[in-house]
Amino acid sequence: MHRKPNFDRNKNPIHRFSAINKLMGAQIAHQEITDSDVDDMEIAVLAAIECISKGHGTVSHYNEIAHAINQSWILCTERGIGEEAKPYLLIAQDSMNRLAKRFKKTGKVGFDANGLHAVRRAIGLWHDQLLLCTLGEVHAAGEVADKHFWAKEAA
Image (cartoon, rainbow, N blue to C red; front, side, top):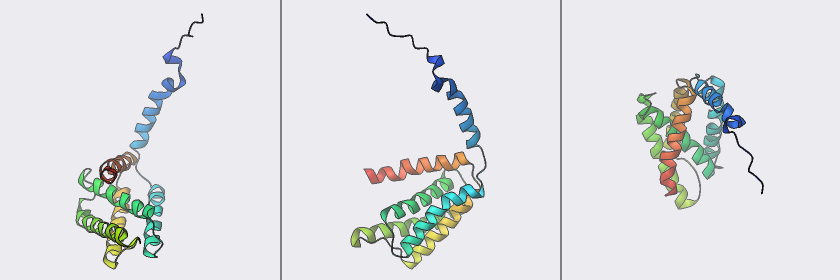
């Protein structure tokens, strides 16, 4: 009969470094977001807007833009960052809803003229909001947007 070897939880390398990982994550979460970080996040959204405006948009482009607008809304309402952007975000969300209805009806992803202008303005405001946030706030807003807005779609 073989005995099971003793397993010391404290000598597990994952357990040993978990406190360090948490401390490093907390330190990173409090860092101010840089222009290059914002540019990295914004480039995908701007590319999606261009693809849709040129008539080559897909559902993934729509989702990319919707995530940015939803994240901006969370930063406005729950974090209090850029509260003056609320009316512009409501107009942009309305244009995204019109785009979704048009897609269900025709199978094409495309903005109307007012919708494109509203979405571009909302993304510009999102860019300005990101410059005022920390990395942790942006991450938390993205998590809330994913949990709240996309859960409705799955149901």
